[in-house]
Amino acid sequence: MSDFGGFINVKGYNCYQVRTERYLGIFPEVIFDFSLATMAPLTFVHPAGHRIRPDQHFETNKGSIPIVARPFIPKDRFERSFFFHDSGYIHHGLWIQKKNGYPFHFREMTRKQVDELLRMMVRAEGAGPVQACTIYTGVRAGGWYGWGQGHEREKARKKERDRVVE
Image 1 (cartoon, rainbow, N blue to C red):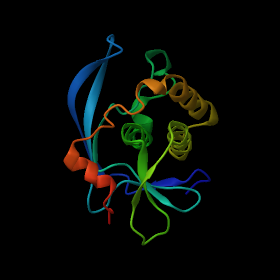
Image 2: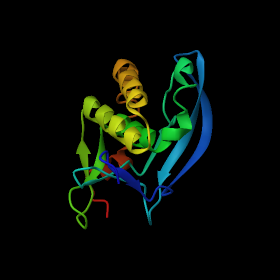
Image 3: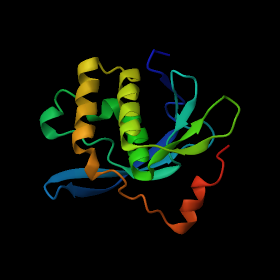
Image 4: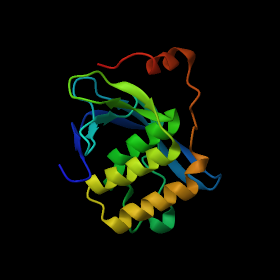
């Protein structure tokens, strides 16, 4: 594990393409259905020791990298980081376990906190400081558009925030 934390259970999710949409009405964007594995779910271990997980189920685009930056920042290279970021953006927070063995609880986060966590995660996935700074600057500049998109869940799914994930 690096100074930036690290991922465990890196294959602990399923992700399937569901449709293509137009981003800003112009650029085609593939949308995926993300679901967290139940037995060994994808988890990020923060340098402070607590564990973080994305929501159980949501839609993702695996990161909105502008076309001009794609030669320098391969979209699929940091997809695990983008899963956490997209989940944090959709639901305004992530699932946190303060100490190993304790249950995960949903923690609301600000957009800046989610963006800073993305910067840390891409560094943990091997991004250099320039790539991480570029990604961070991009989400700070353009992330306002996606913040809270889909935040209003179905009533039955809203109860997930109140329950404890074991």
